[in-house]
Image 1 (cartoon, rainbow, N blue to C red):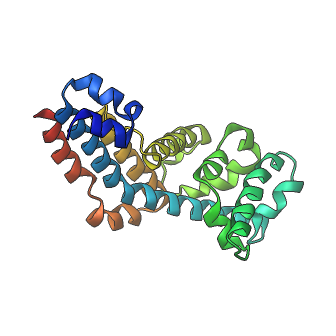
Image 2: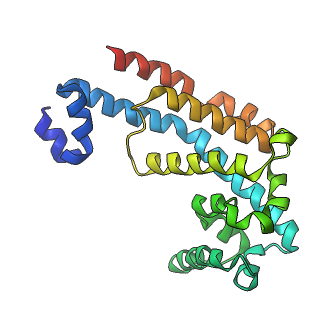
Length: 216
């Protein structure tokens, strides 16, 4: 298969950086394949983090507002009204599927961007005192919103790159770093989660295989 074939099926723009880097079709497509393999290898870690994170945040919001449908108060709570757009969008998606809207449905439908936004500085005075309990194992002296928000935003941006099939493999060292960081934040939430995920988290194994491929 030649360069024209790959550009036709994957698009010239998507492959541009790969061909510019190598000037060789086989090497460029090997790297493209490696990018897919690395993206796949991140799925257990990212999906586990996202589910554990949103459920932990939801539990603390339920305690804070004293109700399972804690999101219902956003439209009338000063400082939180801007978040209601996320709730409205989640409800619309559920209605489009002709499903019954419930707290569990809303929680599952809300985007990672919503959950991460709760740790923005604009909500610090309203939410952080309660949401810090999402991270009970984080060192107490470091348990500050400004220390939590940056990694959460990195995870969100990285997760979106993977889910939109964008390149993640240009800097292998950063991949190792973000994988370790995701495990660390999961440990902050619950020390058993990194232990539970270890048997099927294939990132390290895939990374070493891909690293060899890219060096040949």
